[in-house]
Length: 216
Image (cartoon, rainbow, N blue to C red):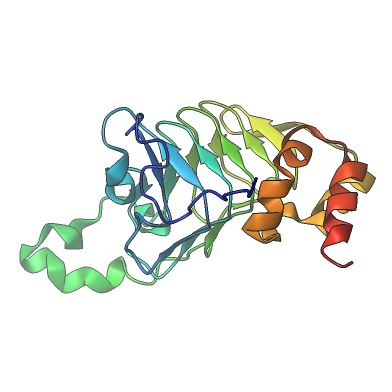
């Protein structure tokens, strides 16, 4: 019986649950790049992800989310446009209010930024997680519900709290290196389809064996 891979271009991969959307076919902003099969779950309006969950995104910094990421309800990315000046007596952004105050727009342009926000592949975000500008989250990481991620997260790290702290890593350094070398998220979707059980419940050795089939 032939295997049929899932379709990464379908907006609602679970038609009976419209609260789930694949992000790649949803996003339109050139400043947001999402990999195949990464999804967002929201009972209200998941299709409003770009406006409700990516905040203060005025550019030029980009939000990059890898493949096969799971974003629970309320996962939010705060972008660099949220920054205010802090080197004077007031942090209020007077020029944005218009009138003659707009003559001083140079006071709020060119604020220092932290660069792109980058999420690796196979990352799981718990309910209400928040990511601040310029953070890099490694492959296979888990961000706990309610966490506020203010610093980079290592590959296969589990973080939680406000500010988020590293609770533990899912594997030791040697096994993380093996997982990154196998890089199952980069396999052709047909090969992933043949090895779903290995990817979800197999050992690292099983994963390596499946990866080796691509080179055989």
